Image (cartoon, rainbow, N blue to C red; front, side, top):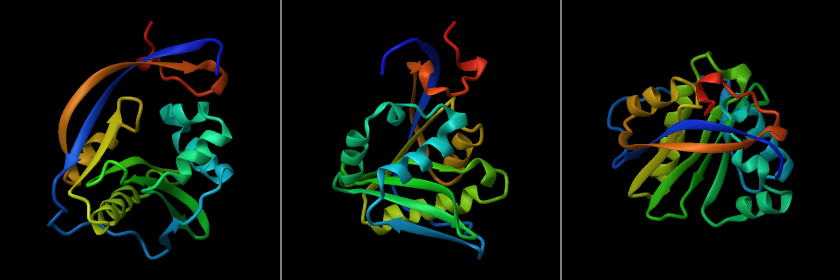
Length: 187
């Protein structure tokens, strides 16, 4: 993708969990279920990724072609899990076991209409449980200052520990039409 870009300055925090949580964890409400997609279509993946990530400047996969997204979705060890609420998608997470024996929680988030309804921690713990059920030796995730402000505290509350934080500059194509918070603009 070419054209003008917005240069964003973000701090990316990398986190790791070396053992499953031992304390009681929140569960999802009865009207919620998580469905693992055996084959996720490119169109549905784009819907999930674009809708969940719109307010948080999820841009990298928006720049990929359909063919490239299809390759990502066919990658060994990659799985897509969709939170269903009363029959419609309420969020998704993506687990990547390619760096085995470590599993990476590559993407995690709720649809805008599902944010603020007490679903986040239960859904996060579902993702954590699913990763450990696959036999990983550690679980990683990263978040950044473009993400929801509760992302980092919730990951830590769930049992992840910070490894490091690095400053990055992202050249986000303006053609994507993403809202860019002033706090992230590089000047």
